[in-house]
Amino acid sequence: FIEAISNDIVNWDKLKKVMKNGGVTYADTDILTTDEAIEVQETNHAKFISGANLCINLTDARRVFPFYNPPGARGEDTFLSTCLSERKVLRVPCYTFHDGFSTYNHLLEGVLPIKLKFIKADNEKITTRFYKACIGWIRYKPLLLYITQPDSYEEKIKEMREQLKETLPKICAYFGMPEFMNVLAELDKYHKNVKKHHHEFLETQRLWAKVMVHFAKP
Image 1 (cartoon, one colour):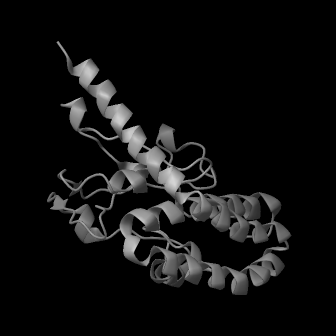
Image 2 (image 1 turned 90 degrees about the vertical axis):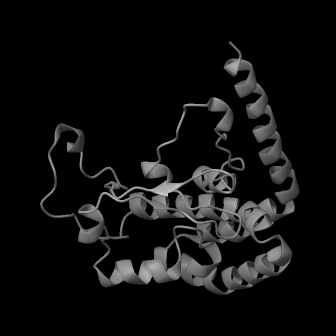
Image 3 (image 1 turned 120 degrees about the vertical axis):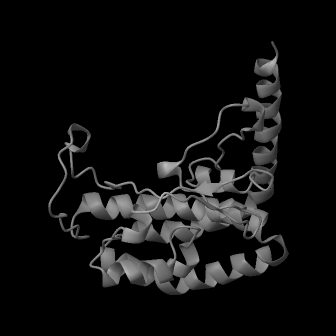
């Protein structure tokens, strides 16, 4: 299931490491103590970025690309990363704390947790959030594959479909939510519309560039 919905951030290798650490990603001391930025290299037509801790150079707005994601999908930062072939992307040594379930309400007041609360998928709020995340992930994966792996796109979609057919009944049973079967339907829907979404992606860039040129005029 994880392989089927995997993306640039969520994949089985990363999840296994997190699971070994009790569900927590710990900061690397070497990163915290260095002041050296590292240039991000391009892989599969993309330079990896993360929307949670992203800084964009706005000195020349004409060099900035717009965010885009297919309707109702996630991944706007991922699609931005596919536009950066001619841009310099730097990984700066810092971390962000992702409060994914809005558990720590006083972070902005400087109150930091000493211990992290255990998140267990045993209530509707948690499982529903995971379900919605899965829907958002599966909705953007067809376009991501279409852009980054065009030569093997159809093969990848077929592989995803088979993986989901095998694993979704087990996911539904585990969480007690038959709605998870919708993940496969959403894959088929967004696969069917991938060319339309790709056109919208390119058109968004074209219109954005036109607007930026207008505002750049003295």
